[in-house]
Picture (spheres, one colour):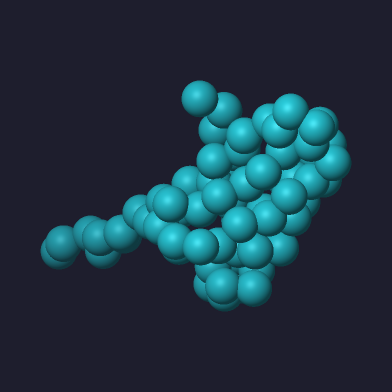
Length: 68
């Protein structure tokens, strides 16, 4: 009996600090899709909202945060 195979999908978000303060967030898998937060926590929350809007979190119900 074969085990079911699961495809792991990754949609990274790139957080870049701005000179004025805050963070720009871009999503390489979705060109032109960007958001901004005044703090890292706010930027992270808004990135999660982008994923929700794209339906990614709705399907997978979780996301993982990895700092590089």
